Amino acid sequence: MWKTLETAVRNVSCLFLGVYVTCGPTFDINRPIKVIGQDPATETDVVVPIPHAYFQSALAENYRGRLKLWSFIIPNAASDKDLSECLVKTTEVERRAGLELWDKLHGQKGDKLKSRVTKMWDLKKAEAAAKKRKASVA
Image 1: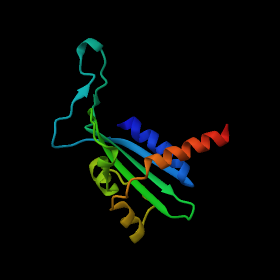
Image 2: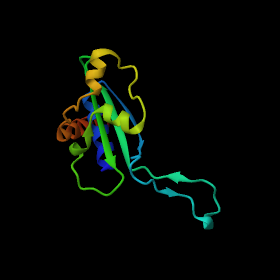
Image 3: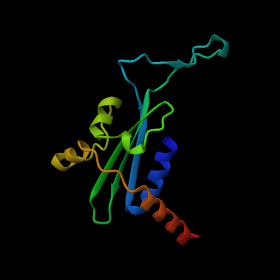
């Protein structure tokens, strides 16, 4: 699912003036956190927590100067969910990750943008735009 998201974001970038992406782990404090690195046989003191999920947030500016914002939370498990089922409000990502994303988006417009789920882009249209762009560069 993560590869699908990465490819989709790369493709959709062809439809916008600029696309900025941030991503990272999320942990559910109500569930046990598994770790790797506690095996005495490995002779290491490094302990790494395994995230329950990962987030990605993409901020795009269209050719009219308007902003679009998409945020996803992808479970750290095999899944056959459709990518659109992982779309969430950016405020949900902020709450679960303990971060403030896109901190320069202030005021009523910024709050509105971060507190809604933006309709997912048309993946086929984005893929076609990416192919067209690659062909024109070659």
